[in-house]
Image (tube, rainbow, N blue to C red):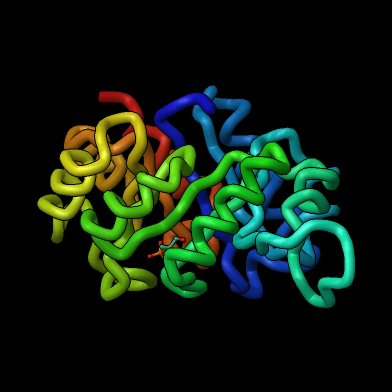
Length: 220
Ligand code: G3P
């Protein structure tokens, strides 16, 4: 995976699901093509098939379970996610948290299926613990800032520094409240390898312009 990266999580926002998921995914692909930036997206399991068919940028699931093929009604199988063309999966998002035992099983199952695994953590200490399970990247997001107007970069830079210090450079994304290129620039200057964000793009009136501004922060 090329670093740094910008990963936009479409969550379950109406603007990022169904037909809108494809439209929004194509805007991300356009910005990636125009700028050369590594822009990734995470979409609902229900939208993975059509989004993966529509764009060539890396597409992530928002969660995968640890079971394989068989009698597992309602589960999201990593093998199936890989099979429809997804690049990776997010695990343990603040809005879908897992106990360590199940999280480790989910990480192992996703990696066995060939998915790139990004695991979220609420703080640097949990990120350190999770890094022992060998995900590809950890994404540290203080939950109280998620979905709000204040960014982790501008209001809690110490959280970024601590996470990079504990987990190591080249392994940490940060997120929560990221809105603009300056937020991205600060995060990278503090040692992060990219950002994870959602509302700043998905709920924006003009996602293209926001993405272009975010990408401007990748250049020091
Ligand atoms: O998955 C990204 C996320 O939790 C941050 O959300 O809306 O604060 O960018 P947001």
